[in-house]
Image: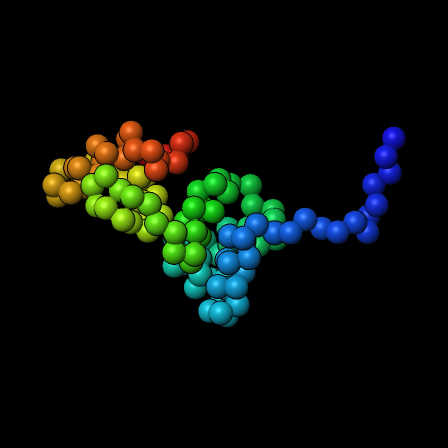
Length: 119
């Protein structure tokens, strides 16, 4: 049986967590970054500590779009920041705007859709 060395090198943190940490340092506030991303301060704090129990896939994609400037090719809008794509995926149907109707329909079967996100 292999012995586990407590002094072993820790795993490097994912690039999106590193980007989130740097943005918090740059803005000098987890709360302002949380507001920018549409999350609570507690979520950002827990994500940075590695204790967040929520949907880290969604948080990762929001960070990649808002902080790391990742984009996707939207079938309705064209090139779109990843965080905006996720925002559109979560919106409820409303016939108040033709583009919202197009986005609602396209998002349901879009290859950019995060599976398991609420709709």
